[in-house]
Length: 163
Image 1 (tube, helix red, strand yellow):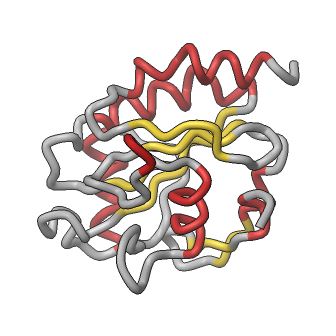
Image 2 (cartoon, one colour):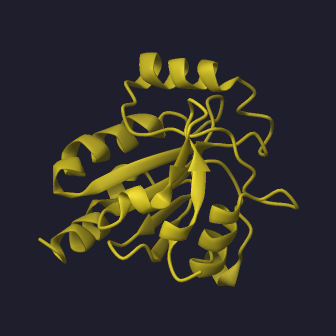
Image 3 (tube, helix red, strand yellow):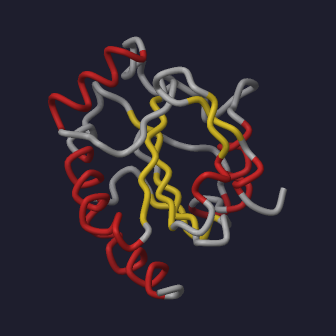
């Protein structure tokens, strides 16, 4: 596929969503977990969303339980935790696999299009981030250790390209 708009995902409420809904937006896609050492990055992700959403940024959280079982909750528990603990207002989705035989097709595409260090395709841990441009093409992968606020320059560049 040429871009992410051809994929469908499932919202945290179970609704089917086309990624085409985000056409023309800059998208930050993150695999998340509620019981991870990086969970506090929800604060930074929400701050990015609030800072840039009016200019066309959307942050999409995809809970994943593949790394140390750090996302054991139900969709309702995850949604409540994110909202109450971190004030998350950006869209969350149902749990997905990001590696292995059951990898969600969207993440398969992201990994192939924006490989990691030394061309690695495998996602190494929670809070790996993919930055997607306004044409739906992934342009950069950020490691779990990259704090959300450290991505502002790359986001600004992509947002400015179409204003």
